[in-house]
Image (cartoon, rainbow, N blue to C red; front, side, top):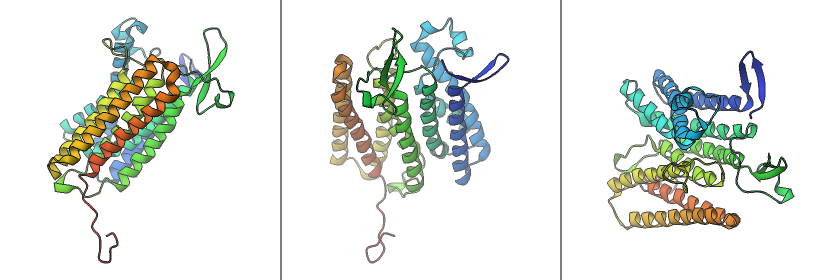
Length: 339
């Protein structure tokens, strides 16, 4: 249970809840600052932030109820009583898309892609802090038991109580993902400032690429990290691949499709595209087989997870190559220096 830091009457404030609240505040403050600085209509972002917050709670909670209905007395209690139960992070993506649709339908913006671009860096930071909040509760533990004493501390392992009451050290899944998402946040913020305004071929849109890049990196991180959990959430018809991994793979594929369509429009379809697609599906197969083997033979995790990480890396790199194919080459000034 989360450690309480303040109790007033029947109201108790927990450390994990405070960290999550700080993550949400950081996300919206950064997003608002970026959107305002780049000519966005401020009321549009405030409506987006409100809708995204409400829908994120509802969507992530609904997915958790769907996957773990046995933990709740009824659907109504699951959606109204938040003192128990949990959430599935995959619901954050459709919540953001729906919030953007509401803002556009309200007539406050015609460019939801720019709204998503400004929101993306803060969203990565919020996910990082959400994962950090797990240090103060027992919502997730890694399924890998760490026996080497020198590794039995953060960032690789954390102590948990076994069924017998003895302490054992397990892979600190959420803390490692916190570190990964901090890296994603920095990469997305760098992309926002260095790539967002880059000229594109054949008048392809520049807005929206930052959000797609964030979705790509988040999907790759979640694809492998969700595999290390023993409490992952699964669809009712599938007990092998978790809903987090399914959503992560779909996000990566969606980004590849969008950038592939734009690349074909800008360059025409050619051998380059078939090469990227072939290698991409090969990397996906490597990732999938690694997941299969680590599920069947848990003692092979020292081999399977590095191979899976390599597969995810190439999924990201090959998808980025598709994006680079729609970027206009930088013009060079006289004398060979870049303009």
